Image (cartoon, rainbow, N blue to C red; front, side):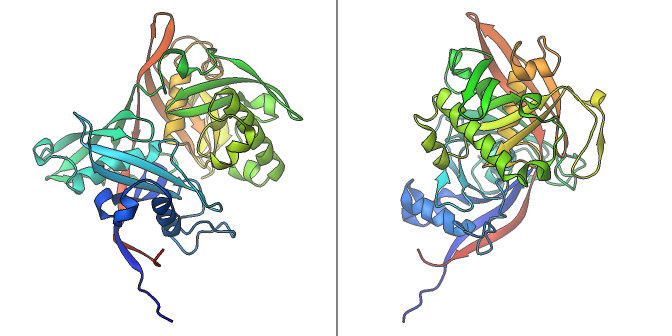
Length: 391
């Protein structure tokens, strides 16, 4: 029997925020995988070690969590006044699909660094020392993101003293601006036109919710309505199959009401969006690392699920949704944070706290988010070649 050698594909393994992923330049992929479609999906699935019925991704680069089963494809931008086109693929761990429906805010922090280091940003725009402003076109959601990447001696600066809860070691700070983060225009940021709705879920109950399309489509619920305090950590939720199934059923019915899917059966193959999160007013709690967070250090508590599991920290795109909702009076997030108009919010998540700012204004009676801002960090973990068996 003729056994063909493995494929060899240039790639970079990077951490961005509280996520990790495999980064590719578009023209380094096999020719057929440079186009969207089944062959590209099959390639990325095999690279990450999916689908894996054991749920471990042992035979691939994936880390068996939603935060570590991610891929990024970058190329010189085809958009005017942009440097790089950024395409994100959330690879399912145990199912044979790649979800292209949304962005990853955490890995966005690594996009600018990769673009600078791999020749996707014009040399004339890179300072010898200072901050390089990288203009990113996010292809999944058709939005502009600006990354402010520190540069030292003409190279991306990755080391520093910026600490991000959910990441063990300090690194250089990368500020990210999500411009016009709402999906669509006008009331489309609130797909029902309301800042608070009532969601009826058969056999489970009726809940007050805020549906918002900012950063990523997100469903916010009050923790107390679900029987929670808002201080829960991963094990409390993820070890409870009944709780996870309940969250998924609520998410599926919410997705229908948001107009993201037509039938709840479609939610099974659209796990990346919408996100679902539960919120509470500030309380003292202990993080997953054992650190104490005091209620006077935060404005509210937020716990969010990604790909069917409670996230260990907070997804970057969900943080944008939190910041946007917090700045608009009357949303559940805003009310949990004390109500009124605000320009920033610091929330507690399972790993610690995060501050996100948002610029909101009313236009013809409709709330509009001009941009959301947060700080992240990123660094290269490994670079070289991915090897996989021939497809």
